[in-house]
Length: 153
Image 1: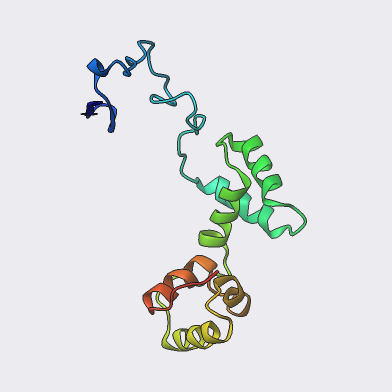
Image 2: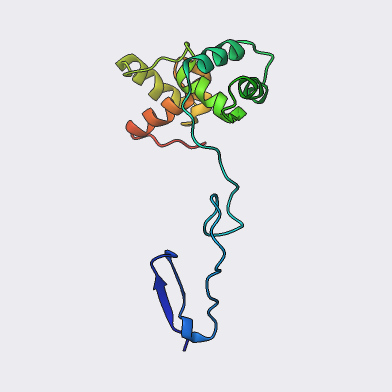
């Protein structure tokens, strides 16, 4: 019978060392990025908060409808060297910086409109956002959840 043990340093169950099927841990030092496995995701850069100059440039570039968010990220990285990608730029713009997005409490009239649109548009946040552009898709998803109407994307 094979014995199993729990190694708290590996945070997983494994074979007991005396079972004959156990292979000892490697003795080479762990890398800075993937201490457990070479197959782990590559190093991600340190999280860098958005600065005021970077946010201002994002606003200018995002207002240019001809640029993709990947191109905007290239511009930002060329200037600030923060390692932003297109998705981060899109999320920053659509969630926090877009002046068309209303932040704060939902009004009762907005809740009524949201429920009406949710019934008509099958609780799909992207469709609802098209009819309520003053709220982001993320805000709509969260509000539907609070109102007890789960999304069905």
